[in-house]
Image (tube, rainbow, N blue to C red; front, side, top):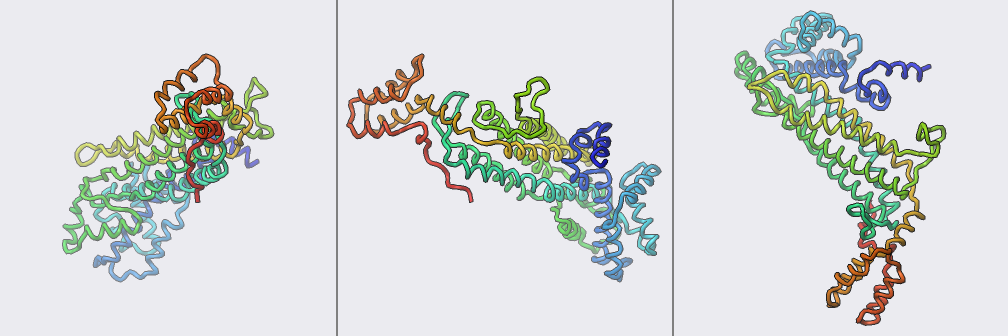
Amino acid sequence: MQQMNELMHGLKNISPLDGRYHRMVSPLQDYFSEEALIRYRVRSEIEYFIALCTVPLPPLEGIPDGDKEIIRDIFRTFSSSDALRVKEIEQKTNHDIKAVEYFIKERFDELGMEQYREFVHFGLTSQDINNTAVPLSLKEALHQVLYPALQMLLDKLHKLSNEWLHEPMLAHTHGQPASPTTVGKEMMVFYQRLKKQFTALRSLPFPAKFGGATGNFNAHHVAYPAVDWVAFADKFTRSLGLERSQPTTQIDHYDGLAAIFDCLKRICTIVIDLDRDCWTYISMDYFKQKVIAGETGSSAMPHKVNPIDFENAEGNAGIAIALFEHLSAKLPVSRLQRDLSDSTVLRNIGVPVGHMLIALKASVRGLEKISLNKKRISADLNDNVAVLAEAIQTILRSIGYPNPYEALKDLTRKDTAITREALHAFIDQLDIKKEEKERMKKITPENYTGMMPKNLE
């Protein structure tokens, strides 16, 4: 019954994130849904009010610590019915932040704290709340949901890199047979690329704007000129785990968020590169896919096991890239001190994060289904002895043999495939020392893999 209810839930949604992929991305509802946005706004307003108590502003001096915790419970116990109440108020105000302010004032009245109600949203503009609530929700979503999914992909690549580090494989540059490599080393390339970007991502600060109607604390300063409001705002935003942008206009300039989106975009690009390589190795029969009981590969061809996880990951990562790119290009641009074009865009931050989450999970699923087809890989190595031409001509160069590249080019560019016997015959007729000939003959496609990186710790 629960499964049927979930299926019914998704049938009429416009976005596949809320429909087909709802179960995969549902953890993000706690950070990017309308209810979550309201809750984060309430949290920012409440924490700001409590910060005013610590200044302390004279009217707020002496509020007991216990009462402050009771006030915090307004957001700590925030429920769906509370969110509905905010939306009801918004029907009258036609202003979402004002609705949050009035909701909190209602709660103050209920708690018998009506004497403090006018210090809710004191001196603020809407963007002081939006530009703390939104980056805070993004930060917590990344840390709690996206980072663990990315770490799962890294862990899987780490495992495969070590497991297959010494499994030789014919490389392909420009789609043509090239100097051999190993399967694990190629997986390690993706592991290291993703790891570096993950490290860079975690080093980026999450920005906040807090400074009043045009960023200058005009209202704060005129009401309480003795307070160092800049220091206050710096401390307040740090308490939320954010870094205050300054100076600003009415809104954050979003350069910091753009840097985060650009980094997420690079990670998605690397994921697409991984997915396409895995897809290609499957098409080359280097990777076999596990057959899952009950799954259908093709509606017409019963024999097929399609690489659907890598294809799904590639498609979703592509959507994420497009949206991250729009976010990072649009948000830092605003007319004069502010226009509203950022507002609707900010509401969509969760969309690319959702598609990225699907891509990460699908990539992991795809990697969990593959195994090496060592027989096919070995056959391909042995059928391409010509790739040893690089090794032979380089050794000949090292001992001063004349025109080695040209000699090997004539041998290896014939219409028929070069065999190991033909290569050895070529070596035998060279006017070089016997020990050099024996050295060359010992080189095979399986052992000509160069220097491997160390196993990953």
